[in-house]
Image 1 (cartoon, rainbow, N blue to C red):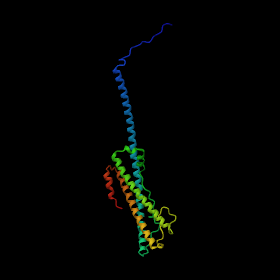
Image 2 (cartoon, rainbow, N blue to C red):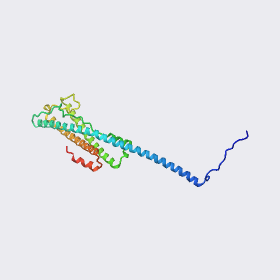
Image 3 (cartoon, rainbow, N blue to C red):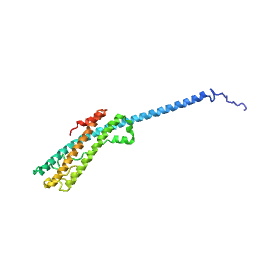
Image 4 (cartoon, rainbow, N blue to C red):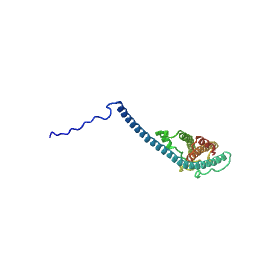
Length: 247
C-alpha cells in the first residue's frame, strides 16, 4: 500500500527566461501575425477583384441593353421629327394663305414615347463605393459617359417640357385625338386665327429643335456604348467620336 510511484521531474530544456527564448517567442508571434495579415489581405484582394469583375460585367450588360433602347429611340425621334416638320409646313402654308393639310394625329410617326437611357450600375457603384475598385482610366471613361448621360437628360427634359406646351396649346381647341396617350394631340389648323397659327408655328419649331437635340445626344451615347463594348480604352477616342454625329 505504501508502494506509490512518484513522477520523475526533469529540468526544463533551454534557458529559463533567457533573452534567446524571449526573442524566439516574439519571432513566432510576429510570423503568426504576418501570416494572418497576409491571409486577410489575400482574401480581401480576391473579394475586390470579384467585385470589380462583377461591376465591369454589369456595365457591359447595361451598355448592351441601352444600345437596343438607343436604336429604338433614335428611330422614333427621327420619325416624329419628320412628322413635326410636315405639320409645321402645313402651318406655314396656312400663314401664307395656302391650304396644305396637316398630317393626321393618327400618323404612325406621331409617337412621343422615348424613355431616356440610364446608367444604373455605375450610379449604384458610386453610392456603395465599389467604383473605387476600378482603375483611373476606367473611371475616366465611365465619367465621360455619365457626363453625356447628364446632357442627354437635360435634352430629354426640354423635350418633355415642350411636349407639355404643345399639349396645352391643343387643349385650348378641339383636339383630333382625345384617346391617344402616346401621341401628340393637334388642333384643327383650319380653325386657327393668324395669331394662333404664328404661336403654333413657334411651338412646333421649338419642338423640332429639342427633338433633334435629344436625338443627337442619344446618338452620342449609342456611339459611346458601341466603342466601350468594342474594348476602347482611350478617353480621347470617346471624346472625338462625338464629332462624327450629324443628325
